[in-house]
Image (tube, rainbow, N blue to C red; front, side):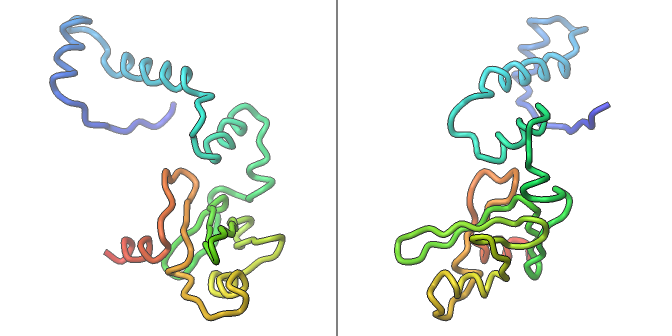
Length: 157
């Protein structure tokens, strides 16, 4: 059996659902059905992040996510920040974005493994950089990119 979580729903919605379905209605099953229908209807929607499509491929038995990134339960530890395998990083330098990813517990860029500080210096042609303020991070499951320094500060709170 799959695990369950609780999500708060506006009380008025629950009242209306009970009025429509009757007092013996299984609201959990009804809501799950609505959500699965929505997910099915929007499965091929443009704009989902790349990790979602890789997840779909894994569900369909076609993915090479594990082959490309490694065990999803492992990753790279950057001081206090955990970057799971599949995490994407980018740094903008001279108006060009440079992308790297965490693969097999290493930060990989152009086929080579780097620490964040050394990678920032490489991208910036040897100039001294602060990787915390240069790299944006998007971990698998994240909806948006976050500056590494912001992630670090959030974890310290």
